[in-house]
Amino acid sequence: MILAFQKPASHGPRRRARTRCQGQFSAWQRLLPVVALSVAVTACNPTGSEPVESKPGTPHSAASVPLPAGSVSPRSRPVAQSVRYAPSPAQRERDEVFSLLAYSVALKAWPDRQKPSPSRCIAAVLVNREHSPVCWARNAVDITNNGTSHAEVRLLTNYLNQVPQKHATGTRLYVTLEPCAMCAGMIAMSRADGVIYGQTADGSGRAMERLTFDSSPVGGYPPYSWAPFSAPAPTKFRRMLDRARREYRGQQHWHDSSQYRAIIERAAQALQEYSPKHEENREVVRRALAFLAGVPREYQALPYDVQCPPKASSSPK
Image (cartoon, rainbow, N blue to C red; front, side, top):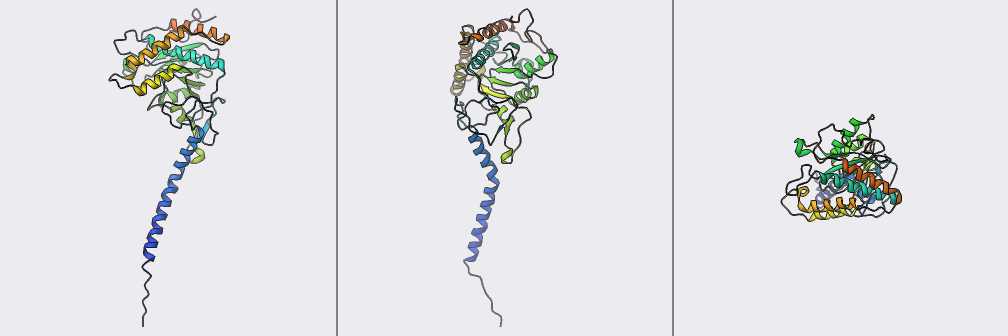
């Protein structure tokens, strides 16, 4: 006699439910590194504040402590800063002066407000350890019909072709627009100390932070071997540009718009009228104005030696 035993019908649904739960748990396991990285990024900088100083070349880690609050990013989203940068009050003032100089260099090539700027009104200035500007460049994408002719690329290429050294160690860049991935990579490869930017880039920004962020604690990748700092310019004109860009609804390219030009003109005028609070920066302002006077309005094909570096006769004493 053969007895047939049948498992209770309730076992089937339980097994299916258990299998389904196991599958969901596996999916969550796969997502854990992503969630952990997101939490780590938020912990690094919950407010999108300005970076704080650290030794150049020190990466920012997912395990770092939160940064002190500063000015909030116009996108108001959590970001990981590259290298900590907290300038002294006197250095912060110099950062403002050279940011105004970068705006002025950009505006100088845009004499006709009725026509688009040939350089998209984007410029970069290189400053050495002695707080003297030593080179300049403007965006030349439209002039050269070359999508890689960004101001930072032209600046570093031209400067390193003019001096007897292969790196730009000890310098920092002041740019009117936050560097893209290409420019951030070149700044890192040049060994420049860092970059101060005069306007936040919407889709192409935070490239330096991406290059130097250490996600290895959560299964990601270590930072690039050289980590220049990246910080927003400490000037009201950067905040004005960021706000106006968010609100802009015109048909023209933003950098050709009358709204953009109006702010850049005010920034250039502010440099002419600048009165430093720190006595040691009076000479810095004089050097910036003398350097600007020697920068040509016309496009300069690479390589060029006009104000890159300045000649002894035009250099400050």
